[in-house]
Length: 144
Image (cartoon, rainbow, N blue to C red; front, side):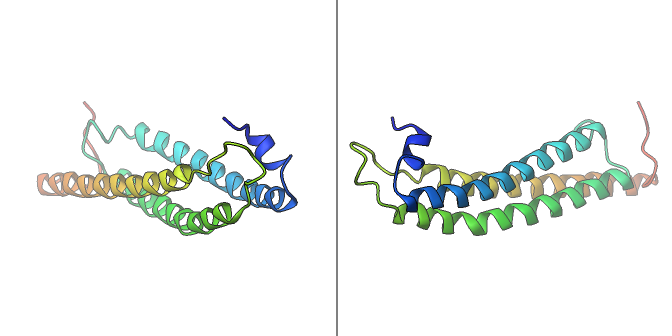
């Protein structure tokens, strides 16, 4: 297995420049991942998996879904560009190294799954809020 730093630092200038560009993307992707975790913890505080959401909980679900979806789409749109850049690099100086784009493809698949799960979660929250609306208590949720 080729070490990451040998692959980019000890390689050509072109590979090193690509590495520096990739670090900008990695920093942005890491920042977005931290935001995703914080928003997931906020949603857990509302215990939406146990009780029907009130108006504020529903708003948080919808806002989180829109925010994460927009961030995921922005990351998904850039990944193919980095994948093409990676495939354009010359790795012939490295013996027995086979370029793999699995990480790029996995990133796209994981973000699409994340968007799908959030949309499903939003639909469930809307349905349960609708049930609460029918019960006549849309804003204040009952505490058990």
